[in-house]
Image (cartoon, rainbow, N blue to C red; front, side, top):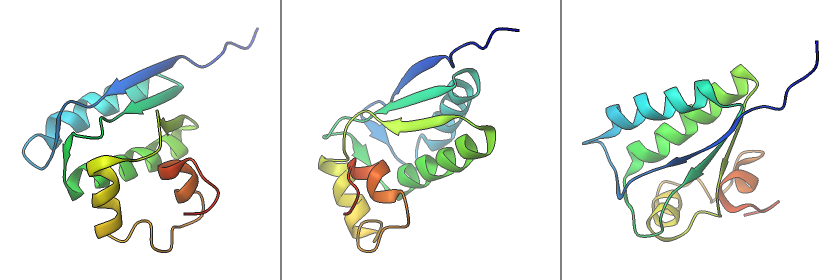
Length: 108
């Protein structure tokens, strides 16, 4: 049986990634990640994001790892996302792979 390449897709977050709509975002993100082998997250620098949005992305990373899928950001975290990551301590002493995921860098 020939090997097929994983399906690649993009998930574009809207301009509001907060607790108010996190449940809908979770359902949409999980659906896209389930269908795709590789999923790229697109987050605008000026998107309104809170810690629940970051938690959703972290949970999606864990799900992707368990399912043998790839999840990445389209570009390094910037704008509001970067500020939330800094305030929450995600970038102070990043876990292995976190700097690569969030900042596309080997070190924060």
